[in-house]
Image 1 (spheres, chains in turn yellow, orange):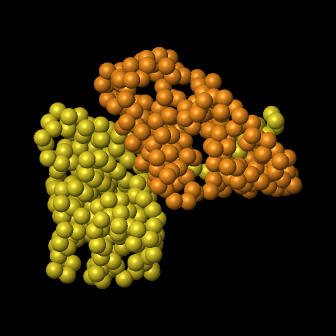
Image 2 (cartoon, each protein chain N blue to C red):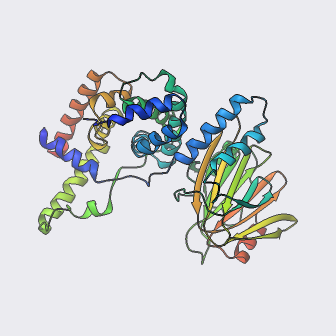
Image 3 (cartoon, each protein chain N blue to C red):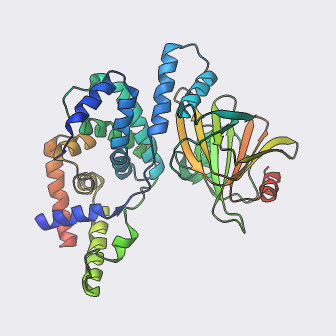
Length: 234
Length: 182
């Protein structure tokens, strides 16, 4: 008896768990948002989102100077002196899945446009679908995500000075190209049950919009590779 | 067994009074255990993270009902497990438990003979496989009691069953494991 229990304890110490996420920034932001809402119940959902994000990115004032904003569809890019300290996580962390594309579409609640490299599995939540593409010649997976902005799903990126931000055209749509230096992404879905997720990424990003949908490609891609993939999204 | 530092009571009291920094300290302290507990219940990292995050938010709102002086850990773990169970119902297949790569190969003891190392690694695999084949409710008792090293009381809180049930399930689980593991 004692031996088996001892062996089980020893086994427990050798178990492999997934990397532990840092929950502090997300919990902080959500609590701050709720308090805000309670005080001013008439504040619109979008305003609450913006407030919560401001809190999520609260870092000591001297370091948090916001240098510039870029807006595109459901994405806000904010240049900051110093990135908030968050751990690096899988870009699909927090989403459900993997699931079939059909399940993802139903969960997301809007019709999907897909790249020509579409895998069979996707990750989703209401208003957002993400999938990991394998692009030949590119190291690591490439994230392809699409979501409906409309003030409900919001993605925010914080970047440092070294990151290049360049406006681009994807077909007839406006886009942004972000290159170099890690950045921090926060997702927030404010449909009554706000969620904040923060993650740190190192890849380059192409973001663009079409209609009410915002698209995001992210990974170790060159600008040309990203634009090429984006052109075939239909 | 829990070894709760004295000042934790003070931190919890400050959080109860609405001190957000104090609460963050509690999140910092317990997020690892909360995540692992949720992971063992729900079986995948994304849902576990979601459950742990949600639990910390709900626990904060429920702090008013937390009885001062009681241990914080089992109270929190109960909320975490509840969130994880809610997600378990909708989650797909559970990820199999795995051993850290190094542990799967050698015993980690000082200079074990190749035979011992092989035997140890083999026994570990057998034991883990035996745990994996336990019925859900027995497996959860084993993972709580031995893998997470929770007390009986904490295990009861996590599984939302009386302590007596924890005892009987644990004893059935150990009997079963002994059959396959020897």
